Length: 230
Image (cartoon, rainbow, N blue to C red; front, side):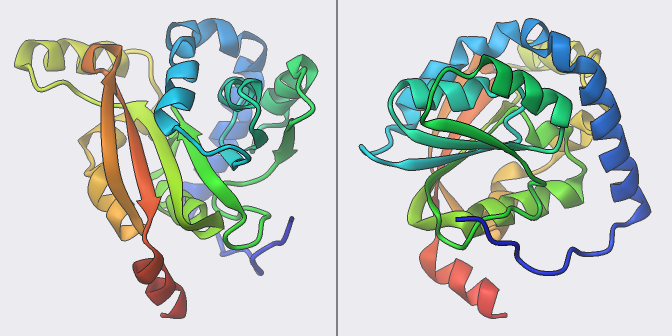
């Protein structure tokens, strides 16, 4: 299944800083990551149920980290590949994995080592907010590329509720502990970016009292082909 897309684009200074930061921070966090993210662990099965993938679906979990979302899919019988940049995080995922239908690989989300149209579902869970904006856009386009025409793309990440008081409190609480890219992410137009990446949102499920959301999208066959041709 693996196939590189070709030459890797030259990194900007910002992107070099981003990759260095990711490897350093998650290298340190890896042994404690599951404890730190325990409050969102209960969402893993909810994501699987909301995805409602067909029997026999092949699933890609991008920026899989310690593999909790990948394992949740595997537990339901799906064949899953989890990819991540951090060797330290993947070591935790591999060490705790008990499922033959789940495997893990080191890979960059902006240059996935898979052929076009390889997966029925591509998922990224609580990772986009940790990405530099240019990396985020490239990662979403890569997810669309490797997802089958009319396949599903699942995005799980932070959001802000409509209620002004809750919005204010949640924003400042999350800002107090999240990384440097969260502020840009939460103020950005994610749905517009998804559309630009060839992903059409079909359903949205608010979670964590409005502090997060699960987006279910479909790969747009026509638009994506036009973009590849251009």
